[in-house]
Amino acid sequence: MGHRRFLPHDHVWRNQKSQFNGKKETGEAPKRPSSNEVFIELQGLPPVTFGKFVKKQKKVGFGTSHNWNKHSIFFQLLYWRTLELRHNLDIMHIEKNVCDNILGTIFNIDGKTKDSLNARLDLQALGIRLELHPVDNNGKMMLPTACYTLTNEEKKMIHQWLVNIKVPDGYSSNLTRCVNVGDVKYRA
Image (tube, rainbow, N blue to C red; front, side):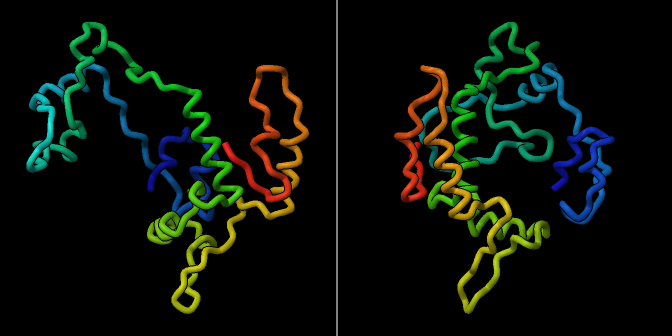
């Protein structure tokens, strides 16, 4: 996968073989293009035609010399070329989505967990996390319990803690309405 190449050179995880794909990471992170380099790459793109298309055409050079689909309209702004960070992300929604994904996975909530058969098959294809690979049990694929999945007792402890938590007025919603301790369920 090569994601560890983005870590600093002296980071501990770069040398850990057993926790990742069995190899030590020595690769370098790719150089981040400057604003002018991005602008020059975008100059070769044809203008976008809005509406429905009969046939999808692949952009010339896509995937080899560039990964751009269209020229952003914001590049018409004079200052846009010089901005280092061109995307302003809504942190509140990102926090909510990350929290929902983490809770859905550790509580193993149907429809909300990211720990699915497809995710486990991806791990198997990459050859990592051998203890999480799916097991064929008489034609039915069984997923071994992951170390990050909570037991029912642990779920009850967390739900009881959420019911009893006290926060300043206006800091968060009333969490007791979102937690059902008897059924070990929560709702957003």
